[in-house]
Image (tube, rainbow, N blue to C red):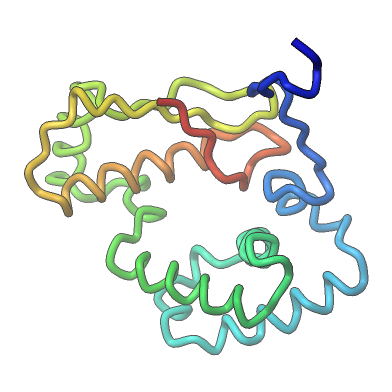
Length: 174
């Protein structure tokens, strides 16, 4: 089999830290002048969004850079994307759940964790968290409960990432 016909695997993935969301978001000092200006413009627009007020504890420059990267540094497309994400976070503020204070939710999450349907198994070689979904163990009949548990696990993943992937998107294993 010739090298050009071989399928690439996970070990072949190359992460360019100055471009990939898992690198640039935590290396804000590496933003060029144009990117800094775009970030400033984007930040001003985001902070004017009504849904930003309810999520001010989630929004920081690294999060904003991730949204800009996801939409090729196009401010209007990034604004639409983050607006939708912030509206979702109003309904499911998973960045606050991990801090505790809700005994019923804690009991639900503890029970769901004991089933092994979603688990954070560690980090890949780039420091990104690996989350494993085992749908054969899914038993939730309430879609809101299922989404809350997924959101909680994704937040857990984000908080357990190693540098330089502290603000990365998630590596999923099936």
